[in-house]
Image 1 (cartoon, one colour):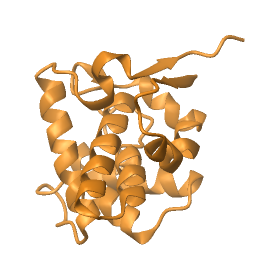
Image 2 (spheres, one colour):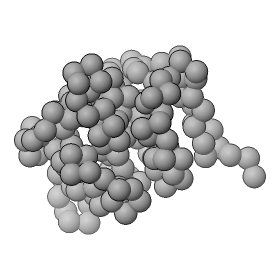
Image 3 (cartoon, one colour):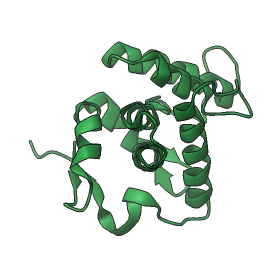
Image 4 (tube, helix red, strand yellow):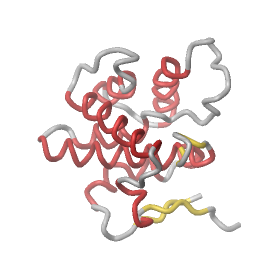
Length: 166
């Protein structure tokens, strides 16, 4: 699987997230339906891009926002199935996303905090600006996706996931 991106997407953004977007395990998120009308990969890309743009505008750590936004739901399993701990998915998946992310990528503490707290108010209160940004971007993207409205990079095929021919 690979991702094709249009030329209108900022090269600065892509430079921050390229290593994650090249990871096949991460790309497998495209197999999981998310918010009824999209898949978890596209949702994560949208949260990441929106978080990067907001962080850049506010003078925050745009790299941490972009990466944590991309990895906040890095859980390659069906959210409709019972969690190993029996916790509700809303409480379990942020912890699972951190574990999965740390197994494949080097994360800053700022990124870990943002991933762990992105479900606020259902979970812990975010403790840095980037975590608040990802929490907000996640809610905006989820709302738009549930209303079946294309947002951010899902609009006009700015990002397309394609299977790689053998």
